[in-house]
Length: 263
Image 1: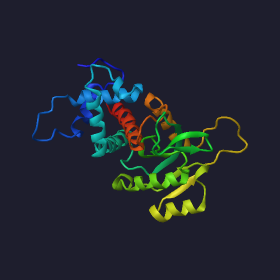
Image 2: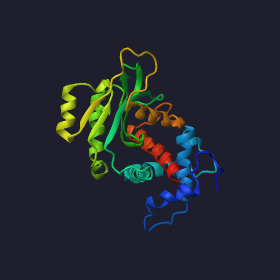
Image 3: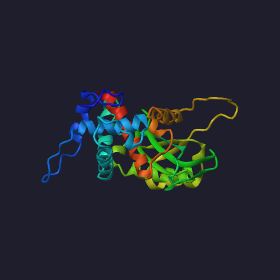
């Protein structure tokens, strides 16, 4: 039995997602670990930002926990759980399961020492690291995320993340408008979105006469989501060797947020 860490799921929260995890494969030795403790160990790393080897001793072995993260990322389990909770959370908030509008933006973050895969320099933000491209609905819930080198231009990253959004199929069958900031301006990009997906891109610009902090219509929603990610210390930098692992952790953070809302 593990201690009552702040990152642990309550039993009510766990019951919402317990049946969404794969069952043990038939044959071989029976599964001895409780998946509940494995998930809590993963959430501990996410929230506290520690290394895998620094997991407290009352959790399962770090190598076992990491093995589950990798396996469930590769077979799509995390994405399946995320998408199911996404629809439940929207319906619980009185919305349709499919959004009609989404917001797309990016955030450049530094990478940890010794990370070399998909790393670049964002000249605008003066950051050497990676860029998180997020697509969120107007509730701030993430639809799809893309992590690439910080040197990848906003429009290039947006094209990739919008393709992922489109590939969700019925989950976005009502979608018609994409809200973006001035970094995505350009007739070629706007035409590409219209031709590929039949979606309209609306650019929201900051008023030139306003100084200091300004709340911009629609755009503030994705900034709030970036703020939610800061609740997890794992996101202070990009510590993951592979960008796919960074994407998995963002889906994990949203799973934690949504399951807490639903329970």
